[in-house]
Image (cartoon, rainbow, N blue to C red; front, side):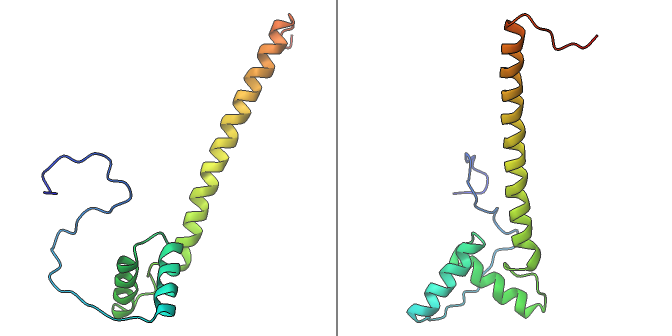
Length: 113
């Protein structure tokens, strides 16, 4: 698709790079190596090629900030936990409103005087 075209929800695809990459690197793997690569890429929810590129570039640049950096997994778990806490809050609010409605139907007031 052209960059200027309107596209609906793109899912988890990243936006295109500003500078086009014009070089390609290829390598051959055994079945066992490919399985290990696919499993590692799946852990961080990346395509195999994207995972391999990030690992190589992190190594070349001398940084430990590759796709399996220590904070990345913790951040993912934190985001998941935040979503669960939000869901619990919503469910508790619903439960509270149901209990309050039953209480009010019985002619009782929750107001303390």
